[in-house]
Image: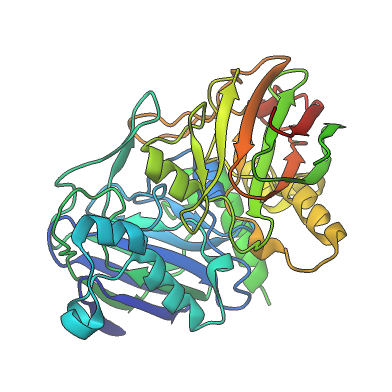
Length: 234
Length: 204
């Protein structure tokens, strides 16, 4: 273990994860949700791209074997383990209007650090620490949340999907700025703002071998690794 | 305000302003063309169409008549008033040289792509205020990208046809950015990119 840290429920976090490090996200309670965004540390204009991630792998959910693509045909991180089974890449963030309507209005003056922070505000704060702003706020991942799309296109958040202690491992393939918010999913129906904490555990990983499950999942991913490895070749 | 009526060949970008209250129509002239489209608040381009805000608010991923296209700040930008195609895509994004290397083959990098059209249009606009930073997930009008209940994404044959159109009314002054898709590698446009017609007009 390189380091370990807890994001309290409702709080936000950012940091740099180096190529080769595995970040484990552990759900601190049932029905967890953590919004996540990824940017290249070297050139943050290169960033996680929902559409390219879905198209390359023909998926509308994320789990073991899937990778998170940048908009430049490279892999920011790979999902090397997942005990939850389904993570939502579609539904975006909460905003302050939605949070106030659903959970009530709070202010630091009264609620102190128990105030209800929206996903959009959380991300704007973390991105601002790297000179990034709303122009950089692209579609995010909601880890630990499952959203099913029916034949007519309707979105349904699966109730009771994630359980305390479930985890997902992200192996970083590029030096990456990671921004996280341990906040409610935008489609959550609970009337109480009580998102569980998320535990972060960073470990040194091993480079993806020729038969790495993420690499061999599909020919697209094999090419994604080639693009990524070319950038780091020296 | 003077209306616009232009034909945009496949592989070309198009930019124009639709003023608040005006109607905006895109016609799929020959059928099954993919029209990659972004909308910006013409007065403050950091505000733009947001797929996530839009699908959250309507509780579904496909766009059709009645859909209100929302911005990243949660404001209503345009409303779809008429749609003879029936379903438009919010998830597939734009093709790019780089994603083409992943999706098809490394040597496909040099084929024309929507993102190259987007970038050229933004560069030609010349104000320097819109760059690659301002390319969020776009709409693909006339494109059929179904999601299955088990979480798979499919690129299905198109459901559009020659002459079908989608028509919106602008709820704010909107800058439109279109790439008329040049993709030759998948069935999104039946492997045959074709022209579109774009029209704006004042309310009657």
